[in-house]
Length: 95
Image (cartoon, rainbow, N blue to C red; front, side, top):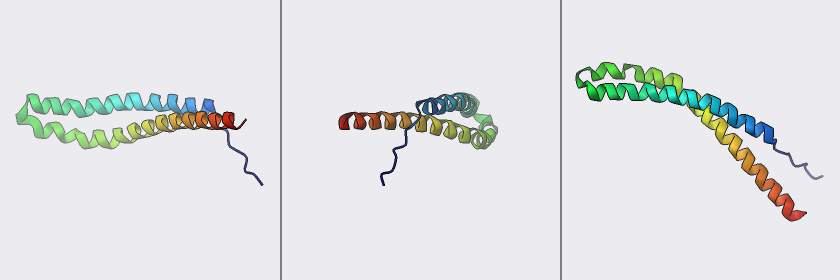
């Protein structure tokens, strides 16, 4: 018995990309600012460099999971659209 081919939803793929962007952009900006500000402070005031890096573990612990989650959602949405296009191209060649 032939297995029915599963159609990848275009709306679901676009939703993954949009929600991923809504998570990725703000969390990426906050995490980036939280990483860059201590570096700039350490460069401009070398005497207080030890205190400037105290927040880096907190920023990474709270920011990176959301950055990776948003990036994963964007990647999955784009890969679903590409797989859908490949599937439609293959079905167009057969028919």
